[in-house]
Each structure stands twice: as C-alpha cells, then as structure tokens.
Amino acid sequence: MLEKVHILCAVRDRHAVEAIARELDDGVHCTFQIVTDGRAALHSGRQFPPDILVADAILPGMDGLGLADSLRGAAGGRAMRIIGGAAMPFAAEGFRRRGAYRVLDVPWRRDQLHRALTDALGEIDHGIDWEAAHAAYEKACALLTEMGMHAQLKGFAFLAWSAALAYENEARLFAVRERLYRPIAARFQTTPENVERLIRHAVESTMNTARARGVYGLFGNTIDPARGKPTNAQMLGLLVQRLRVS
Image (cartoon, rainbow, N blue to C red; front, side, top):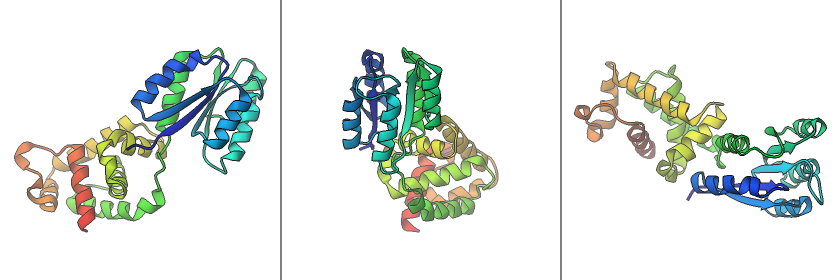
C-alpha cells in the first residue's frame, strides 16, 4: 500500500478545495482534511502533522501565518510545505518569509491551487531513507557498468536509484511512477516524466551499441534479443533480482 501524503486545508471557503480534494485523493494517494477555523486546524495539525498545509492568511480563531508557525514547531522538524492564500501584499510577504512553497491570491483559483498541490506532491519523497538505500545504489551502479551502460548518461543514476529503492521495498515496483520516479524527480529537481524519459534513453543507448552484449550476458535468457530492447520495467525488475542475489 502506498504511503499517504496528508494535506491539511485551513480555508474559509471549503468549496474552493473540495473538488480538488476529491480528484487528488483518487489519483495520487493523499488524504485531505478541510477545516474553516484556525484553532481547529491547529488542533488537528498537532494530532496529525501535515505534509502540506494550505492556509488562508485570514481565518477565524487563528490566522494562517500563526497557524503555519505553530505547526512547524509542533512537527518537530518535520518538513511541511506551505501553500498560503493572501489578498494583501503584507500577508503574502509573511508567507514568503516563512518559506512558503507557493503563495496564491485569494479567493482561491481552482487551476492555480490544483497546480500548486500537484507540484508539491511531486516533491514529496514518500518517506524514503536515501542513506539506507545508498549501498544498494552503489551495487546497482556496478551492475549497470558491468552491463556496459555509461555512467555519463543522465538516466544511469536514475535507473540505479530506482533499482536501489525498489530493492529496499519491492512493493514500489507496483507503482513505479508514484513511488520511484516521483521521489527521484523531487530529489534531483526534475519531473517524473523526465526521469522516465532519461532512463529509457539510457537503456536504448546501451542496447543500440555493441555494449548490448553486456546486457544479454548479465541477464542471460531473461531478456530475449529477438523481442527488441527491454522496457524500463523489465530492466528495473531484472536489476532488483540481480541485487538480491549479488
């Protein structure tokens, strides 16, 4: 099961975010809580620290700036992305001083908020322990080098990290885009689509040269030359298998 990303929305107009909440909750494995009072949001956020806070600058009970300050302290250093909504320049600047991920105008525009949430979700690494996965990453790099893939190819590192993270948690192979490409993209400041494209390029570049013999030699009859180049998923799955027996 995928890790859930918790989003707390403290907004005066709950209808502005309900449709987005339904759409994102269905598509990218996150949970939404929508409240219209700042103190209620603080109580909820202390019980369940959010990964993303969407907050109006002006709220009954407690303003959005104070809410952001209080929840950052309550989270004990936990990374929390803030999407602030402000109608006045001083409130927008207040969110920016607090390191807000995005500051939007209110009333909320659905397209802007949807984009901000989608971008923020794309940068959350779903609790991956990169340090723990580093040894598997080094082994994956050695396997890719052995098969003849050039380390200079941008997709080389992305493929090695994908294999290392899947080795640490093989369930990630069943949701590659969300649980591998998305956190890798966030860590290396690119997009999941670019991660996928560069891995594909690295695989195809290797298979288009004499180095393809290294792939077939490494994986044996698990890749059939008559069927063309292995897909990203095939290459990733086989790398994970090799990591498990190496």
